[in-house]
Length: 397
Image 1 (cartoon, rainbow, N blue to C red):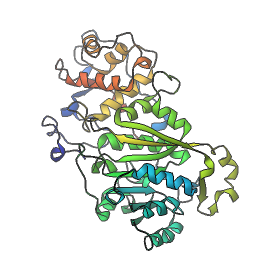
Image 2: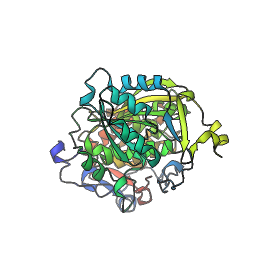
Image 3: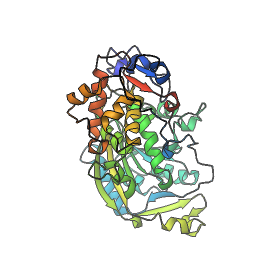
């Protein structure tokens, strides 16, 4: 949650959101390149900032068709469910914790959480499981609410009309969930197994929601507890020590969250179902063989210190743009990127953040990008600090 009542710095309180991935001139002091080129360039580089193609960020419908293209994965092992209860609830009073479970299916984990006395809200997209889930609340100790919705598809970006079952404002209001300040503790924990084919797209969409304090992040620092594939896990934690895996996704997630690896779980601990029943007897059986791999259970906790006076939900899109631009040409010196991105004198900025002008981005760790961005935002050298192409302004999911 972000706004004047949530501790928004006075300098930024005058500005409002213009929409997803829009530059706020008052907050970020950006200028379109066509406007900036009309001004004196003061010897800046002629390296022109071109649109960066990223297939993961292409504009495309996020909603899958009614007939699922791939089965949903569920917890099938009671031993795993018991371990997950311990990981999710810890040693705290379970009745004081609110946990959102995504697509619980047959409810093996749901039942274990309720027996421990937890308060659970189950988001189930397959209606055939709902009667069984609702029956659990009649016989167990915890509190259970069941919502017929796919949690991973709520609040789709760039959808003019969102159905009530996918609108977090409506859903959370009906559930009696109220926002808390970002500076407060973790109000809600989310558990889910990311669909393999949509895994990367969900991670990107969640990043936009997190940095903009939209969707579930209107309600505070929501903690994600997810099972992801090994490939995505390695990308999330990658640093310059693994240049083959280090990318924009790595930087933005590590800046935003404390990423904790809990444990690895074999595929045998899970089951898969599609709308017609077990996937083992479906036409998808062959394609699923390549998907059967160990899953990594990780915890993503948004940092209390993520937002500052110089990096906020009002200018996060410029930070995204800076990082994506730098990774667009990994081998170029950082000073060359800065001369394309900003009108601020790059030599002085790099000196203040103790980065050598000739360094490439593969020598910069995630928090180096944040320090660099905040130093430029802090600079008083120029009215318009950032230069951008309008063709890049709306690159979102």
